[in-house]
Image (cartoon, rainbow, N blue to C red; front, side, top):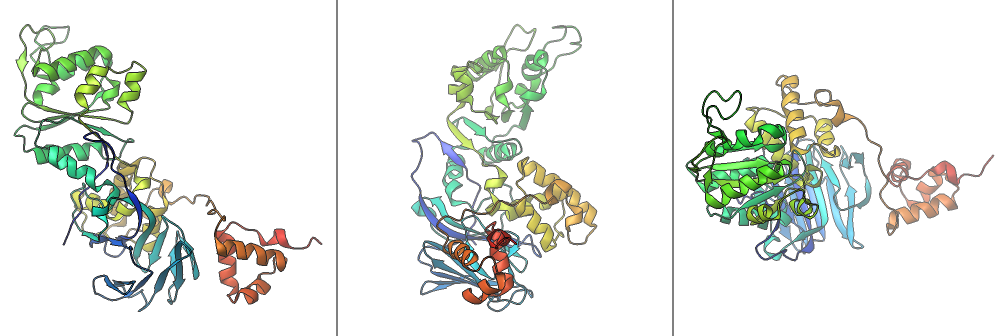
Length: 450
């Protein structure tokens, strides 16, 4: 079974690679079996996707992709996606229904990025996903290292990281708080096979007057309270890897000292007279753009140049819904909770939440929910209120949607009479009401005033 490792948007070593948008269907999570393999399915040359019950791998034939789910709540032919007018149109033919972004949909357009729920399986449809030609292929993955992705647009960058892991090329990790910068740094250390330890330092958490003594160590008697020699965090990472997280918060004076350490490969402890040799790899991480800090004279340009060989920007979790199942499985595995399952409503809430604190927030939510569930499937009541709180839905744009345009015309023609519209369009009243809700319309506004 082929696997995909986490890759991210990378800069350096020749610049950006051009990507063309391609269609993919992601099997992101099975609520009943969250540790089952996930998949990225290529839709190039596919005009129809049929999702139904079965235990066979995905199969293609004459422009049709058949996806089988081993799920008793899935009908033999449950839902069909058809390429139509430059997009995708879904038809539900099941007993239990198909949900799109949390709402039941009998028939209608499915937009790029929509989450499609069939039984306990959650799919993400991407009609315009930028990808290089070599990544236009199916990928199946059950790798739970925490450095795993199904996103093709970020695959190439981590391949490059793997190539540089055993070299002396420096690395800068960027991304919002909680996006997994330390996880990536640990993976680089593991791949580097350096004999020393991995040491992570949060520069923002050290008091400015203590930064140099904490990083570079000190000699006994160097200052009040220095009762013994201390090696410091830099020397603690000797022969290993030092992650300097939030490096943009380092004082300018400390930046100058760090630059000398990197250039000379030696550390002068506070109060010391002789430098101490050190062999380490430094990985810098920040939620800020170091180049922007240099431009505003809050970061040394020579240090930024020394640190930045390859730069990687980790995407926020809200832009990685395709990877949600992989991350869920990795987090629960690390927590020793490989017995966890989800109720569908709880899994649905995971996809609906924007995760402002990213993977760190997801980890906290899952570990606490697993404890509260007590061996039973995780339910909505086990998840934090911030995850389950209903959010106002923004109606999708109507422009260019033939269903929305026709519905608006029928509402006007029949003065908001849902029954008359249903007869005219050959649909049920329920379907018309779902469309009205989906497109953010108000039937009352079309009715004659009394």
